[in-house]
Image 1 (cartoon, rainbow, N blue to C red):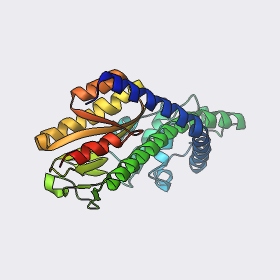
Image 2 (image 1 turned 180 degrees about the vertical axis):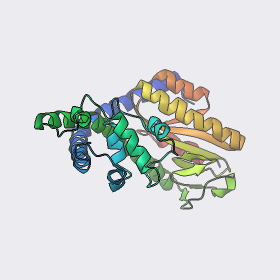
Image 3 (image 1 turned 90 degrees about the horizontal axis):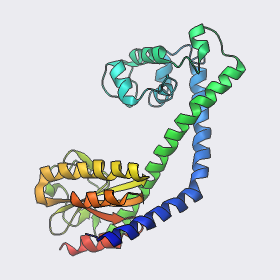
Image 4 (image 1 turned 60 degrees about the horizontal axis):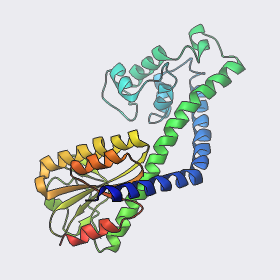
Length: 292
């Protein structure tokens, strides 16, 4: 849709916006996430007798949060995928009562003996040991939570901006939440927010007035490698699946912000993904309203 010069210009503008935003907001967000994470880790330490008593009951105090902290207390930290494998149960976002003891046992086995030498020795930590271990645990977990919060904030902002320009352009918001399994589930001339489209989540599905669906994905990237993942693997993968389900009745678009390699942008074009930019949503409106 765009030539190389236009892609390069928009790419640079997105990078400039990304840098300016980070300068303005990141220090405050980091400080907040660091303090929040430190308090969370201290609570987990207190509830488990400084990790000497990791029990099913301690996991169930905060089943949707504390198991993430304990993953970072393992040596090395255990990923979600690895934890599910070690536990031997279903994937989970909250620890259920049925799997709590299995999960606690994994953490007892994999606890980091370097950071927490007192656990294996069966004693209380010294004040200096506890302080060093707390700092060493907080830092990587705070970094992960900071990155997640940043992506979530950018995604919500992008989705809200897309919805706003579509509403201004005369498209109706469809508040129906049932999955879009056939084209006519979504009325012509309407859009929705974060909804299942042929089994995959779509940030903003839009039913054009000519009957086709424009599946809009909102993506923010903090670097070229991340951009490849977001654009080629995630958006491109969904585009392939939606095309298999609906054929030419669905088109996929990406609204981008942040840092992307020019070759990733060209690669997305090759896969049939239409590119728009958060900093200039005028072309998206023009495209959507021209499909009469």
